[in-house]
Image (cartoon, rainbow, N blue to C red):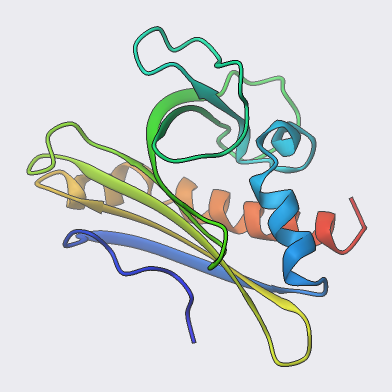
Length: 173
């Protein structure tokens, strides 16, 4: 059963990936919320920094929280090799739920035209492992267009993220 929260809008394009991780939920959660460690293990979201919403300068407190704004550097294709300049997006963190192990960030100042949501969730499996789920959804009039624009790179990037978290949490990074 999925631990991903329900979408807050009608998605026109949606990408979902998941992986079972051979590590306890709380250990995986610590890695997932440690934004400063993302450049060391995450080949797709190669930098995630909490920034001031107006100046886009890093805040003094780098911890993951909501509400907040983050500068998200996305590397396509997903790689830990920093030879290629990543695309930087500014997203709004709308949920950090420590009790239910969920994170949501997204964008779209004009929701009827463009809306995006990136949700991550962890849940414990019956055998003591952790299920990691990621969903990225697009809505608004441009939702179908986004399927064409990122349809090839986003699923690959999300899969690279779940695989990298699994590797890191299982001690193979």
